[in-house]
Length: 287
Image (cartoon, rainbow, N blue to C red):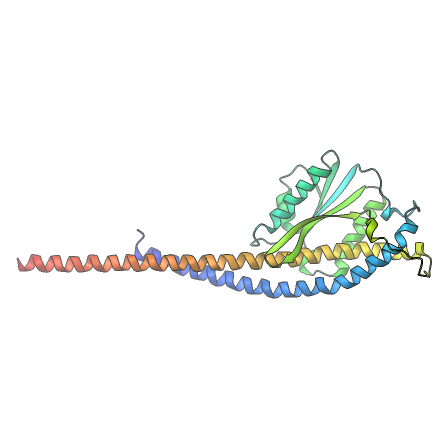
């Protein structure tokens, strides 16, 4: 059994760790509320924009010059992996990279695949895999704005239009609730509108014509999609970190309870030994 000094040292250390994890939990909870609000505020705008694009895409599908919605044979793919810059959030980062690798293996095992890593942890983990990391973006979460997301989205759009990549996919943790995240692999380019999302536009008069509207709204929709993925991942990160710190705080509390019991037993044993020594000494003197 460890001596009293060692146990006291461990108790002090665990109390200090518990204070840190508890503070980190509170900070993550505050950041999570802000991130949730941003996602909630973006959704109505994104949904309405998606609705409008669903009305004009059928008219643009036959226009081969409109590359952003034109599918083509896939030879080279860019997979964008979104994680965080920091750890201490459980399996959040590892799950995103593992999900991306499983997605690549299932869909593009025989294709040329490049990686774009958004978040420092994505690059740290993905370098273990046999894919080329062509770009790292580690500053985006320092100030997550639509302008910064738009700049990154514009780069992806330009690379797709130039033919450098035949498809762009985005893999990230989607926020479900504070304790749960889901890894999603979404098609970014070419822009896909599912058949059940196409709208009948016969009751609408478009001014200017649909092609002009499409040139303006399709790139904007792509920027919104990319920004939403970043916001979703950011909210999921704070939720994962809050949960991880909550579990760490609970574990520290349980450990403190065990150490306190251990300390009391050791102290009781020490006192008992001292009493026995005193009694034995008294008996020796009286004999």
